[in-house]
Length: 230
Ligand code: C5P
Image (tube, rainbow, N blue to C red; front, side):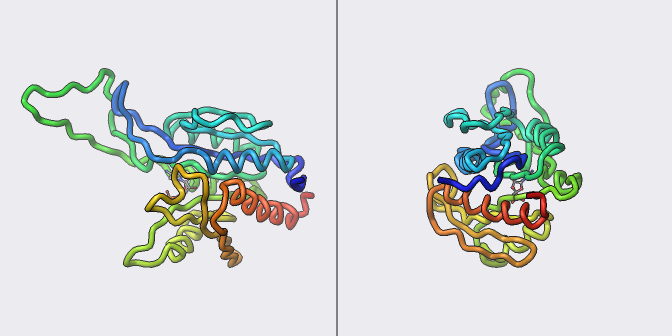
């Protein structure tokens, strides 16, 4: 049986990937399936938490038992839903893949092919960093968990990039996933590291997304206990 160590803890989890419309039929999207966020919501509910799941395009997944589900589409909608839910939450987990850019304009009608064979130019504009905004308006004692999907490059390893992002995002826990070559996105298993500002660098072995969720909630439950709220 799972521990009931999140009894009465109010958590909000975002899951899935946002879509940014170009016109009524087209959008810019990403490959997030929502499986990791759903596993986080499911496991939290099983451990006694009061769960709100903010879901962006996760229609293929059944609602996690016991969770209150809010469906959104764009990053702007996700931001509103998260700020709303976070105002009454003890723990906020941003597992959703948020579009960093959106088309600057959304055409009212379907964009037509031009007779001269030319193609339209799409101008993009930046979306807000929702997690950074949540960190700024964080309630006292609220625990914030972020995700980072990184690849190693000439500037450093996956872990190097994760350490930098942990600082930049101002979160209490960062789940760091190595991505590329069939990893993390769409698949049923996940692996990575769990980082914290106190120097935690816990390797998360390859396993079901529910196992990664359990590792995250273990760390959250410890932070909640350390606050003396339970
Ligand atoms: O900066 P990067 O996109 O790698 O950060 C990933 C983390 O930030 C995830 O937790 C993601 O949900 C969140 N994020 C966000 N708003 C964005 C982009 C990412 O909240 N516009």
